[in-house]
Image 1 (cartoon, one colour):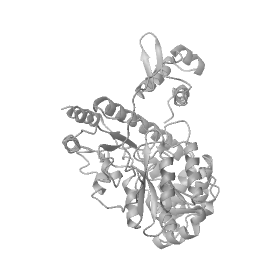
Image 2 (tube, rainbow, N blue to C red):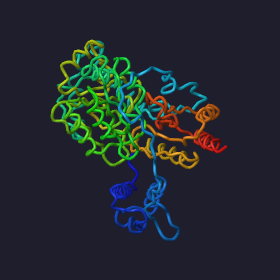
Image 3 (cartoon, one colour):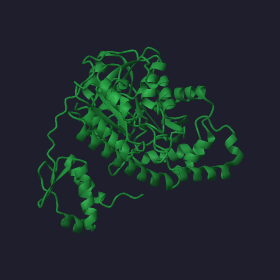
Image 4 (cartoon, one colour):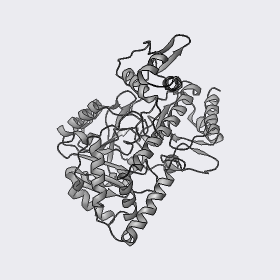
Length: 467
């Protein structure tokens, strides 16, 4: 699936609005002018403006044209406790809340952070698997190198260079998924009882790895406007002996926020000052809704203090258990820890991913996948902001997740009863923190198939909140 033709001009308008070059109330070029300038049909230009209106960036004025929308919404965000205090992670009953699908045929699982079966490129994967079996045969039944296939590590290095991260293939470790990579990274940089800084809200799986390694966590607030709170981080570093910072700069889960390059550089400057390694989660980096893939903090690393990890379970299929990490100066220890967790990652999965990265099929799938994700994200955001009274739901810039906040006086028990009644599963905000700061938030995943009945059910839940 190719990008919509209208994106050739809508992307320019979006960028100019975001940069402040186009201000609220400014008139935009007419349909005729856009048509002539970009050599598009009238229907394509109209579809493009409809898209901008749907995103809330542009307003249509009858017989006058289009203007930049006047955004007047002010967001007052709850933050965790002001003083950075380390806490011992406590395992709650969060597995089902964050990943349980329940009765597949009855519920819409908007709590499962994985692509639905309909979004998995099944033909591409099956065709590639058959090719691998035919070409490699019995070799797939042997151990592969402990660090992973040399050809795969070379392919990952070349791909990283495309978005500005220069990674030596020899410092890459192939892992059984991203969560194992995170475990290795934390084990290589900390000891039990140490303090790590994490984003708040923070995805439950990261909190559980921290718990399993007997670490303590300081929560750094993430805001809708600026993302990771740099001032809060610096204050935490001054007051505490932080041993690592775990961060998702590209399409943070659950907020969907993309951190700017300047913000990434500032964080790296602070951690370098205090000699603290950064553990960077980049599993959503390929799932961007703009024109180009964002870079990573690793792009700016000159000392080897940034450990970057990723996987293919979000961009391809959850059953493809293959991740990777660039361990930087922590490679020797990370290599030993990886070996202790398993001699070799599945040769079959390694060869499948290597084949995909060395063909045009993977990028073609990503282009189609991103369009599907963006469409579903916009549909959900539109319904939440329209039908949920007093709520706030920002538009994600990529990734999988939408982070919604309900008014403080909302009866959350009643809200989840309505969700149960209408057979919808969201992830409660309480699973994203050790505090109660997000009890009135919930996360929605838009990588699952969202049907018209499902959208109607969300509307009914919103209407129920009025009563």
